[in-house]
Image (cartoon, rainbow, N blue to C red):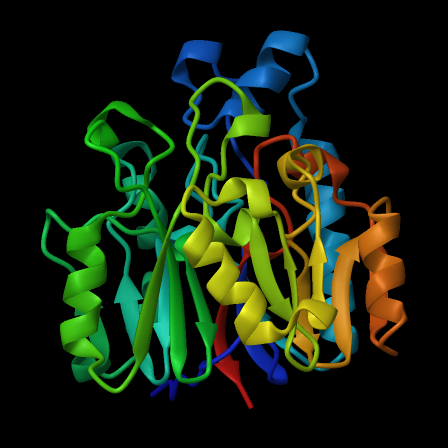
Length: 304
């Protein structure tokens, strides 16, 4: 059986699911895209191709394996996008939660049945149908669980609103020892610079109590101020909406001292290096054109 263990974003990674770009299918029509970054690239004629994304993901996999991490790939579903494994489920401590995601992505969970079958049944949670949540909105920070959401009355009108208050309340009941904090995020189905698709698109803890975040992505100033006060202003790097839309927050930690990041993110990479964090810089620009990056591609199962 598989003994899960994840309670933060930075403890040493031991086992992870990494998404795949194999057989992702044809370029979608703009009206069928469910995030504004993909839509933008379809309209510009710059939507990424399978070959380029497979090369980028293989480069990421090679870095992970260099650090003796067990990397699991989903089984291939023909003509189906399976790059962003983060969203289909997530681990809290030793429990696997199956996400309630967009109907268009509902088959993705089937591709990791071989992993789910190894998890004890009493360590798997399936949410009620009215509880919408995706793993990109869930950030673990030891005793805290940060969750991105959208509280507007027009929630159902946004393709980019993926996590609701019902899911947050459900998880609070299932994990009473955790301190849950929700963050109301900006949403747009058409403009990637006005859309925080998930919480990990606009904030992420890193290193020893450091934080990278985009203040303009948070609708509630008090919620954002809490974050800055919690981590300490001297430990926070703020980025712009434009940088957020390019996925600058979506690096991935192997441990407190090793981070995988896009090679073109000079500001963030240099900031991380200033704290003696080793930055593994790779090319992930093509994947980013679908509105996700490194953290989005991963589903950690075991951290030390």
